[in-house]
Image (cartoon, rainbow, N blue to C red; front, side):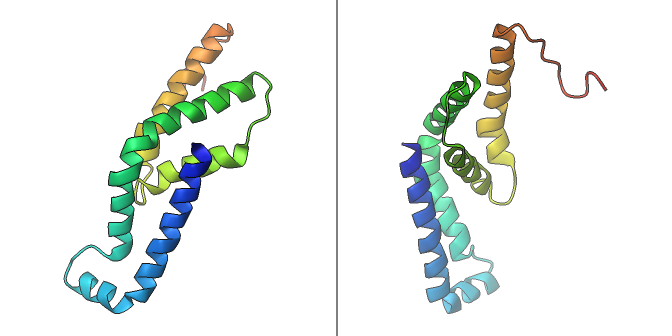
Length: 128
């Protein structure tokens, strides 16, 4: 599922880039009128039609891969990075989606994991 999501995201970005180039005159006209540009509309479309539907499932799958790596298994780190890039890029220039939809859960999961392993986890800045 994760590989397919990365493939579709990459295809979507290529198509949006080519549409923006092909319709450059229209895109410039839209920008002068204060209408969202084609790239922004493309990202918004992916976000609303795909990202909203799969980000929760993708989060669980990535957390499972992280669990496997903690237990000594080899995982596809490039795949994990590519999925996390999707979270970041869907924040449209901010880290908001990554932080809301993944980081918060990963930090909770990490604390739970190390707690179950008997390791004390301190909040940021606690020891400094």
